[in-house]
Image (cartoon, rainbow, N blue to C red; front, side, top):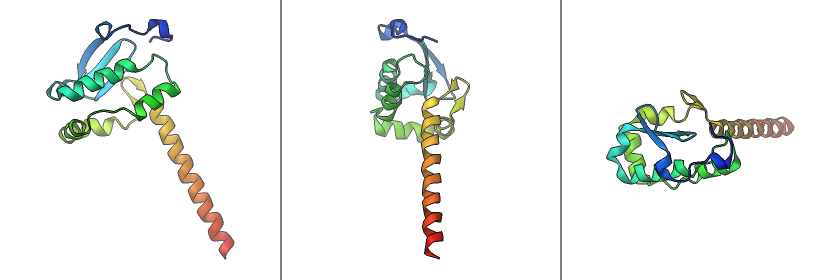
Length: 131
């Protein structure tokens, strides 16, 4: 896996595309794994390829985290793809898959757990002090 900016591919033609059927899209180094059925969604295909190309090659960075957060993918084609491939949509929510660890999902799930914990703690504290 590339670890510094100098090893980042300089153009999309440097990236190797592999077609799979168990994820929407994933990038590891210069390899991009795309779902084989994305060919039937041309606007979504182009947007995802551009999105994956814009990632840096670090294991985790805030830049990548926010890049995923505001993906800007075409909503209608993405909804249609998810309806046609519900199993892929569910697998995309797993933080560990055959490609490795998705640190962005670990951060999001960690924030959700912290939020639930703090909310429950506050609710219990208020409830105990009302008695």
